[in-house]
Length: 257
Image (cartoon, rainbow, N blue to C red):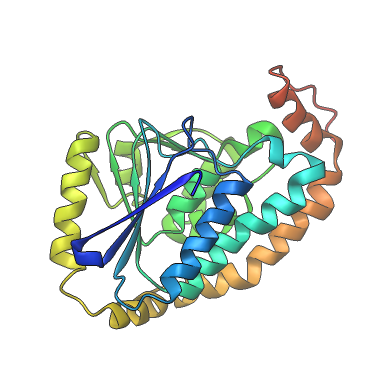
């Protein structure tokens, strides 16, 4: 694998995926396809009780690749990206995001898809897509389901940052630790106590049961938001201006159409 690393812990019961592109762990098409390949591998492994996601280095992920958000590549990128969420739903294996540093855009959406979100105090989460003139389809569904519409709408529409303490206070994060080392130790202890003693097959049913509403809404509404993004949003001048302005490192000039 070029941009992901995989190792197993807890006697093979925990599959640990490390996002590692040498920069900001950007979720580009290469990384996303590698992740989908891993999910296929996990599907045939009856002993996995948990999948963890973590970023190598100081940050979890800067998000999905902005160059792949351009009109030319948007449909390919978004369909591949959304396949990740559908596959996580199909697998039913419990998932955990271990978040340090910046966890932005598509990176935050990957974390939101997880059953458990653990972080350290360096964590900064955001869905800043609106700043680029676009919106995040998966987060537009998952964030309201996780923390309620009022809080989610303010975060999605403003694109502002959420620091670790606020994330804990609003129920977005399960636990927050002092630093990355403490996060790793704390998560491992929690996994040992709360996941490892359970049956792998029964955990899958527990995930599907506890997420019955979440999975139903994601499965039925994400295709609608995908089409809204590709067929309507990306036909506007401002969505294309926002992406191009970011790539050209300049302020966008909105035409409001």
